[in-house]
Image (cartoon, rainbow, N blue to C red; front, top):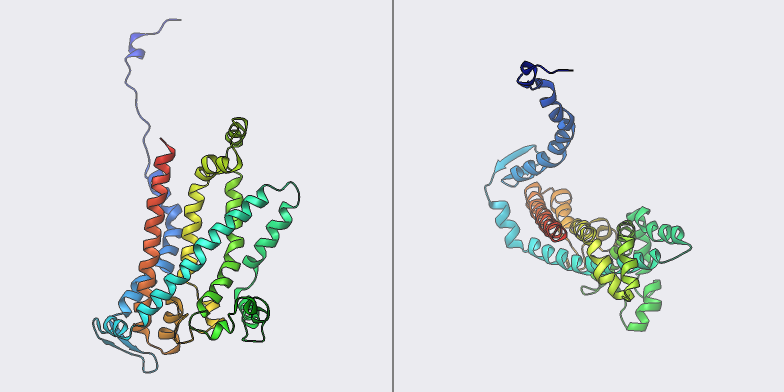
Length: 307
């Protein structure tokens, strides 16, 4: 069979790309972009807009006041106090829940029997209604009559936690850790299933101990999950409200009032829409900072993994 020179030299024509394939990706993501705009971008823009106005809900009026809401929030000192309390609550909940959650996940992952049972046990606090559980914990922390004071409190000499400016925030942090640890355990258990088994077996054959296998094989493999867990628990700590409102109400003397509770107090309880919007912007800035840290750490882990 002979091939003619004309057929060999015939130019290759590219198929025409219609308009529909170019538009299809944008049509598919349009509903998601619309939801993001409605539930994320638009509320943030509205909060920024309201910070420059004094709004009277009962009279239905708005008066432009410029940066007066920012100045009033700074003069009162409530924002700075709530920022400090939120930071302390984050320190008291995020590192302990991550360390204990990882330790429990490693213990459950090493079990030969009963893994599903212990997973369900530690996930129960996550599935429970936090407000209802906070009421139970408040009853346990009742001064001189609660279970905590009659047992653990008497042993260490610390009682009446919820009415103490020093102990009220640690009491709420205990509940926060109790609720977060189960979620952290589930995430780490999922990450441990992705650890390369052949690397663990090779390290075991080479004589590496349990700590060496964890530090040199397991820990690098679960690095992205650790970053994700840190960001999720930090965001949860920033927006904690249910436990604070149910157990202490932000007291005593605002010693346990976080930014989320202050936002509710200013915007809902006192109808100070401008002041509440200022606190909202502070929370939004902290959330954006946490997201930036997540992206930075994730990018570094990905670059380290490709070397």
